[in-house]
Amino acid sequence: MVLTPRGLRFHGRIFPCSIGRNGVTRRKAEGDSATPAGRLTITGLWYRPDRLPRPAPWARPIGPGDLWCDAPDHAAYNHHVRAPSKASHERLRRPDPLYDLILTTDWNWPDAQPGRGSAIFLHQWRRPRFGTEGCIAFARPHLLWIAARAIPGTGVIIPSSLSKYP
Image 1 (spheres, one colour):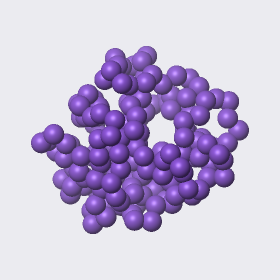
Image 2 (cartoon, rainbow, N blue to C red):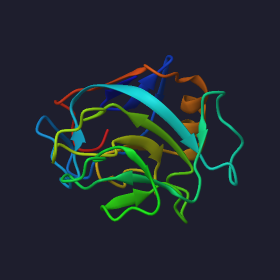
Image 3 (cartoon, rainbow, N blue to C red):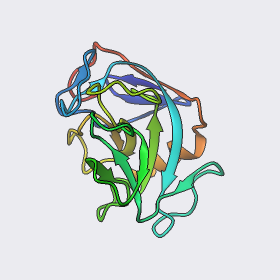
Image 4 (cartoon, rainbow, N blue to C red):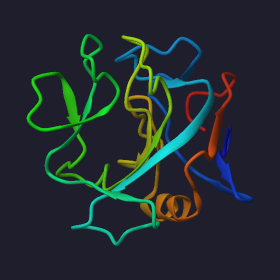
């Protein structure tokens, strides 16, 4: 996978996508709303079984207690955790469809450095060109197509020279 000015290129196709509302950065920090430049790797695939069929054999279901820790001072920073959690976190099981399907990456993982950013996912967008908190987001049909073909270890190349919205 390669992020280009026209979208994400994967298996010979280009998919329109949204990136962080503050563009791409080489100096990723927690809460900066930027997508980190570099080479990331797909590490996981999560899905809502109450909303979607399993998109690939290796996909994990998202349950009501699944969270992602975004507290830089916590031992589980930038890792999956289960509720209840007193540390700051994102719920993976959201009321909206944005996280119905998530491809996780190895950005600042597994040995997370405090404050370097967390939860850099590939997920569904709100609408075209609507900036994310740093993730890469797609139309649902495109995300489903990508998830059915990506495998653990698939690379995601994000050039630092990209404009704000590919």
